[in-house]
Length: 381
Image (cartoon, rainbow, N blue to C red):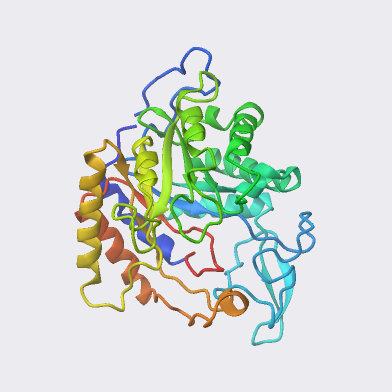
């Protein structure tokens, strides 16, 4: 397979509407050879939460992420977008009704048929693959680990079936301010390599010829943990240099204004030191740009160009984030004041999504991250 160029990206616009080189692993490494995806360059990847649950799906978590406190009704609804479940093999009845009086139904991320359908859609609409979100709680808790592993196994099978790239993204959300550090992720990564053999999968995403692992959640001021005290340097060193489980490329999820260390980013220069030790930087741009502001794409273009130049001097690659829109009115109803408006960042029938992708490519981006494939509770699906 020849390396794809950015012109290959155009079919991915539909998602917003809802070298094969024989390279062998280093001696002692448990990773397989480079498979179908040797580089992130030229690809459009999406984030995949996989966190929706329903009573009866075997998770025991009630209406996880559909509602609040395991309930899902008019008073405890946390989604702004209702999923079209007409193609799902397995769905779950809710207390909501359609106009004709029939019960409205939803899916569960725990079902293999759900994951299979999502990867089928990725192939049909030109989405190259997804990063599977793996929250810190999954690495910490054996109970949460079970569901997380089921979903990841299902995704690996679907990834192979439909030829979509797949990668692991650790999200530090949930990491406590005291008594915890990134050691749990090291343990979890060893288990994924040993038991699930994620990096022996032909469709696992490599970058710079190495398995790509992402760590998301560094430099955000709303986090309780201090990035200087969580052993992030130890984790990155392990992933890059451990003779058995390392030899990986590392991507870091950081705030939009990581370069300036202001606005949505902590003013801590240690973040720059950490970024310089990685291979790719992924700034979280959701809610930072909107179609409601004149010449907003000019601002996005200039921002990306400056980011790319900053990264180039440090030999770090760069991935901008695009999103079809954003809304979390119902999700914010209990936790945020004032309550956020419905459709805060409108989609404009896909125009906003198209403009971001077009602008990112013109600004020099060689790879794209879409937030998110399945996140209906923040209206980015």
